[in-house]
Length: 125
Ligand code: FES
Image 1 (cartoon, helix red, strand yellow):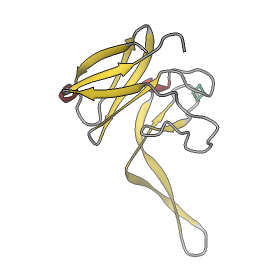
Image 2 (cartoon, protein in one colour):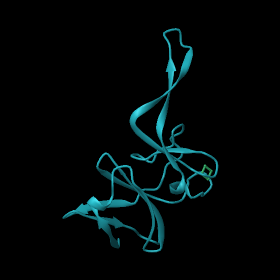
Image 3 (tube, protein in one colour):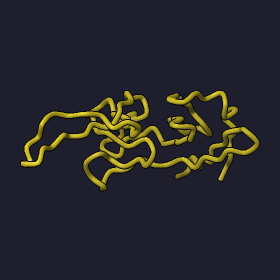
Image 4 (tube, rainbow, N blue to C red):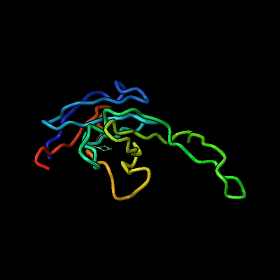
């Protein structure tokens, strides 16, 4: 699979989101807590440009001892990307949809070598 160098690791700040075309393929690259994640910019729902969406902390329901919902809060470190077409949310680390395991982002293999970030992208897949 073709390999593309996309920059030095330290060029990507924590919380960065970069959209790029690599080997003819649109991808979204994210840096979270020092780790790099990369996904194809195609939403598994209906093909929207998911990586162009906004990034939010994961929302958690607050449930009391009687089972009643008592508001919402945000997870400290989990981050979701929200597809701009219909609002589907995906975990940036896993690519999984927040509600169903049927929908998942398509991963782009990443590798960090000697401080450089490489993506392995096959435009035929
Ligand atoms: S295309 Fe992304 S939520 Fe529908």
